[in-house]
Image (tube, rainbow, N blue to C red):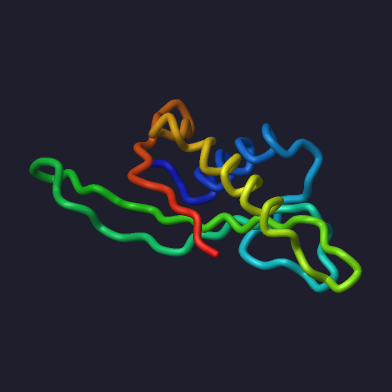
Length: 113
């Protein structure tokens, strides 16, 4: 069985591939966290339709929040955030995430502001 920690580690490895050396936070960011950085948290686990007798489908939903540098007024620049978000979205474009020798199906990704 694949655990939520294994999925989280696979997502973090993907993020390190496009943002090498940047800090990745899990679930919460501390006060005065470093920027640029990312945060990954498990938002929801749900039970999907049965695949066959005695086999169920678990669906995991993760949220990735990306943080860019801020200006003197502590504002992020939307074009920079949009580019970072698109890069993250591209990580899941193949439609799967490799975790522990398996390829987990990615049902969808979206960018929200």
